[in-house]
Amino acid sequence: MKVSILYDSKSGHTREVGEIIKKGIERVDGIEIKCMNIEEIDKEFLDESKGVVFGTPTYLANTTANMKKWLDDSHDINLEGKLASFYATADYIWGGADTAILTLINQIIVKGMLIYSGGAALGKPFIHLGYISVNGVNDKDIDTPMIFGERIGKKVKELF
Ligand SMILES: Cc1cc2nc3c(=O)[nH]c(=O)nc-3n(C[C@H](O)[C@H](O)[C@H](O)COP(=O)(O)O)c2cc1C
Image (cartoon, rainbow, N blue to C red):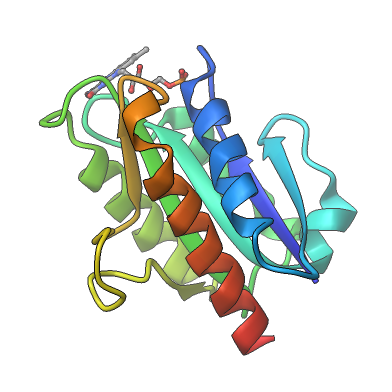
Protein backbone atom coordinates (compact mmCIF):
# COMPACT_ATOMS: atom_id res chain seq x y z
CA MET A 1 0.00 0.00 0.00
CA LYS A 2 1.32 3.42 -0.98
CA VAL A 3 0.77 6.92 0.40
CA SER A 4 2.08 10.13 -1.20
CA ILE A 5 2.80 13.36 0.62
CA LEU A 6 2.73 16.27 -1.86
CA TYR A 7 3.89 19.68 -0.76
CA ASP A 8 4.83 23.10 -2.03
CA SER A 9 7.77 24.64 -0.17
CA LYS A 10 10.14 27.54 -0.85
CA SER A 11 12.01 27.90 2.44
CA GLY A 12 11.66 24.30 3.63
CA HIS A 13 9.15 24.40 6.52
CA THR A 14 6.42 22.56 4.65
CA ARG A 15 8.91 19.94 3.42
CA GLU A 16 10.20 19.38 6.99
CA VAL A 17 6.71 18.98 8.43
CA GLY A 18 5.90 16.54 5.62
CA GLU A 19 8.91 14.43 6.63
CA ILE A 20 7.60 14.22 10.22
CA ILE A 21 4.11 13.25 9.05
CA LYS A 22 5.84 10.59 6.91
CA LYS A 23 7.50 9.16 10.04
CA GLY A 24 4.08 9.02 11.70
CA ILE A 25 2.58 7.11 8.77
CA GLU A 26 5.57 4.73 8.94
CA ARG A 27 4.37 3.62 12.39
CA VAL A 28 1.70 1.67 10.51
CA ASP A 29 3.06 -1.56 8.99
CA GLY A 30 2.92 -2.25 5.29
CA ILE A 31 2.77 1.31 3.95
CA GLU A 32 5.32 2.75 1.55
CA ILE A 33 5.46 6.56 1.65
CA LYS A 34 7.05 9.15 -0.59
CA CYS A 35 7.28 12.80 0.40
CA MET A 36 7.43 14.84 -2.84
CA ASN A 37 7.66 18.46 -3.86
CA ILE A 38 4.88 19.18 -6.38
CA GLU A 39 7.62 20.17 -8.83
CA GLU A 40 9.23 16.69 -8.71
CA ILE A 41 6.45 14.14 -8.47
CA ASP A 42 6.87 10.41 -9.13
CA LYS A 43 3.62 10.13 -11.10
CA GLU A 44 3.56 6.34 -11.11
CA PHE A 45 3.92 6.23 -7.31
CA LEU A 46 1.20 8.87 -6.92
CA ASP A 47 -1.09 6.97 -9.26
CA GLU A 48 -0.64 3.81 -7.15
CA SER A 49 -1.13 5.67 -3.84
CA LYS A 50 -4.33 5.05 -1.89
CA GLY A 51 -3.79 8.12 0.28
CA VAL A 52 -2.45 11.58 -0.53
CA VAL A 53 -1.44 14.16 2.07
CA PHE A 54 -1.29 17.73 0.72
CA GLY A 55 0.97 20.25 2.44
CA THR A 56 0.83 23.97 1.75
CA PRO A 57 2.55 27.08 3.07
CA THR A 58 0.08 29.85 3.92
CA TYR A 59 0.31 32.79 1.53
CA LEU A 60 -1.99 35.76 2.14
CA ALA A 61 -4.18 33.60 4.38
CA ASN A 62 -4.60 31.01 1.65
CA THR A 63 -2.86 28.20 -0.23
CA THR A 64 -0.11 29.13 -2.70
CA ALA A 65 -0.47 29.93 -6.38
CA ASN A 66 1.90 26.97 -7.06
CA MET A 67 -0.44 24.57 -5.28
CA LYS A 68 -3.48 25.91 -7.14
CA LYS A 69 -1.64 25.69 -10.46
CA TRP A 70 -0.58 22.10 -9.74
CA LEU A 71 -4.20 21.18 -9.01
CA ASP A 72 -5.40 23.04 -12.11
CA ASP A 73 -2.85 21.21 -14.28
CA SER A 74 -3.16 17.73 -12.74
CA HIS A 75 -6.14 16.57 -14.80
CA ASP A 76 -3.99 13.71 -16.18
CA ILE A 77 -3.58 12.31 -12.64
CA ASN A 78 -6.44 10.24 -11.30
CA LEU A 79 -7.07 11.23 -7.69
CA GLU A 80 -10.65 9.93 -7.56
CA GLY A 81 -11.46 7.68 -4.60
CA LYS A 82 -8.14 8.21 -2.82
CA LEU A 83 -8.05 9.41 0.77
CA ALA A 84 -6.94 13.07 1.09
CA SER A 85 -5.54 14.78 4.19
CA PHE A 86 -4.07 18.23 4.62
CA TYR A 87 -1.54 20.23 6.57
CA ALA A 88 -0.36 23.82 6.38
CA THR A 89 2.54 25.88 7.67
CA ALA A 90 2.33 29.56 8.58
CA ASP A 91 4.23 32.27 10.43
CA TYR A 92 1.32 33.32 12.63
CA ILE A 93 -1.42 31.50 14.51
CA TRP A 94 -3.81 34.12 13.14
CA GLY A 95 -2.23 33.95 9.65
CA GLY A 96 -4.99 32.02 7.88
CA ALA A 97 -3.64 28.45 7.71
CA ASP A 98 -7.14 27.04 8.28
CA THR A 99 -8.33 29.01 5.26
CA ALA A 100 -5.43 27.62 3.21
CA ILE A 101 -6.56 24.08 4.12
CA LEU A 102 -10.21 24.90 3.40
CA THR A 103 -9.28 26.16 -0.06
CA LEU A 104 -7.49 22.89 -0.75
CA ILE A 105 -10.45 20.87 0.56
CA ASN A 106 -12.71 22.85 -1.78
CA GLN A 107 -10.56 21.94 -4.79
CA ILE A 108 -9.92 18.35 -3.77
CA ILE A 109 -13.65 17.59 -3.47
CA VAL A 110 -13.89 18.44 -7.16
CA LYS A 111 -11.24 15.78 -7.84
CA GLY A 112 -13.48 13.15 -6.22
CA MET A 113 -11.20 12.42 -3.26
CA LEU A 114 -12.36 11.27 0.19
CA ILE A 115 -11.39 13.73 2.88
CA TYR A 116 -10.05 12.80 6.32
CA SER A 117 -8.48 14.65 9.25
CA GLY A 118 -9.41 12.46 12.19
CA GLY A 119 -10.99 15.64 13.54
CA ALA A 120 -11.81 15.79 17.21
CA ALA A 121 -13.30 12.30 17.10
CA LEU A 122 -10.09 10.54 18.11
CA GLY A 123 -9.45 12.60 21.23
CA LYS A 124 -6.32 14.58 21.96
CA PRO A 125 -4.51 15.92 20.06
CA PHE A 126 -7.59 17.40 18.35
CA ILE A 127 -6.68 18.08 14.72
CA HIS A 128 -9.59 19.88 13.16
CA LEU A 129 -9.21 20.55 9.41
CA GLY A 130 -5.64 19.31 9.21
CA TYR A 131 -2.32 19.69 11.02
CA ILE A 132 -0.97 23.25 11.23
CA SER A 133 2.63 24.14 12.04
CA VAL A 134 3.49 27.71 12.98
CA ASN A 135 7.10 28.89 12.46
CA GLY A 136 8.39 25.69 10.92
CA VAL A 137 8.99 22.54 12.88
CA ASN A 138 8.21 23.14 16.50
CA ASP A 139 10.53 20.88 18.52
CA LYS A 140 8.10 20.91 21.40
CA ASP A 141 5.40 19.44 19.19
CA ILE A 142 6.81 16.61 17.11
CA ASP A 143 4.15 14.31 18.58
CA THR A 144 1.14 15.96 16.93
CA PRO A 145 2.29 15.64 13.30
CA MET A 146 3.49 12.09 14.08
CA ILE A 147 0.08 11.15 15.50
CA PHE A 148 -1.62 12.88 12.56
CA GLY A 149 0.44 10.73 10.17
CA GLU A 150 -0.27 7.57 12.12
CA ARG A 151 -4.02 8.27 12.03
CA ILE A 152 -3.87 8.76 8.27
CA GLY A 153 -1.92 5.51 7.84
CA LYS A 154 -4.42 3.57 9.95
CA LYS A 155 -7.39 4.98 8.04
CA VAL A 156 -5.84 4.23 4.63
CA LYS A 157 -5.19 0.64 5.74
CA GLU A 158 -8.72 0.27 7.13
CA LEU A 159 -10.32 1.56 3.91
CA PHE A 160 -8.23 -0.05 1.16
C1 LIG B 1 4.37 35.59 -0.19
C2 LIG B 1 4.20 35.08 1.22
C3 LIG B 1 3.00 35.26 1.87
C4 LIG B 1 2.82 34.79 3.17
N1 LIG B 1 1.62 34.99 3.80
C5 LIG B 1 1.44 34.50 5.04
C6 LIG B 1 0.17 34.64 5.68
O1 LIG B 1 -0.77 35.20 5.14
N2 LIG B 1 0.04 34.15 6.94
C7 LIG B 1 1.06 33.53 7.60
O2 LIG B 1 0.88 33.12 8.74
N3 LIG B 1 2.28 33.36 7.01
C8 LIG B 1 2.48 33.82 5.74
N4 LIG B 1 3.68 33.61 5.11
C9 LIG B 1 4.70 32.78 5.79
C10 LIG B 1 4.71 31.33 5.28
O3 LIG B 1 3.42 30.78 5.23
C11 LIG B 1 5.55 30.43 6.20
O4 LIG B 1 6.83 30.95 6.40
C12 LIG B 1 5.61 29.03 5.62
O5 LIG B 1 6.00 28.13 6.66
C13 LIG B 1 6.61 28.94 4.47
O6 LIG B 1 6.65 27.62 4.02
P1 LIG B 1 7.94 27.02 3.30
O7 LIG B 1 9.12 27.22 4.23
O8 LIG B 1 7.63 25.58 3.11
O9 LIG B 1 8.11 27.77 2.01
C14 LIG B 1 3.88 34.11 3.84
C15 LIG B 1 5.11 33.92 3.15
C16 LIG B 1 5.27 34.40 1.88
C17 LIG B 1 6.59 34.16 1.17
